[in-house]
Length: 131
Image 1 (cartoon, helix red, strand yellow):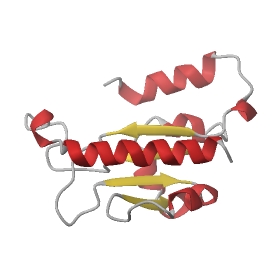
Image 2 (cartoon, rainbow, N blue to C red):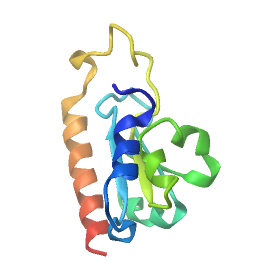
Image 3 (cartoon, rainbow, N blue to C red):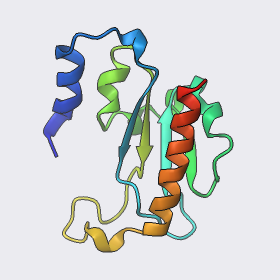
Image 4 (cartoon, helix red, strand yellow):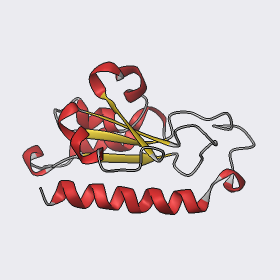
């Protein structure tokens, strides 16, 4: 991993683009791990994007509004976009016990769950793009 969001900061600060042409930044990370009975994936973003998540399986994706969950939102690349007033959603596991340990390997991934999440993310992205 690069420290301190270098990739997203570089993109935001060095590319010549009209930010109005970016509908939303969707940052996907740490997906695929799900403990039984717990939220596997959380999406955090602005309130105006919440409606896109209303039709998702509530056991797969939980949407948290940015205003009440800003501390959970700050820990990743979407922050670079947010600071430039570009709508951004963080989509992934917020935390899990194996994170950044020797146990954080492919054996903890639930591939059926990951496949369902990929389909959910595709549907949400498609809906946002075509709105």
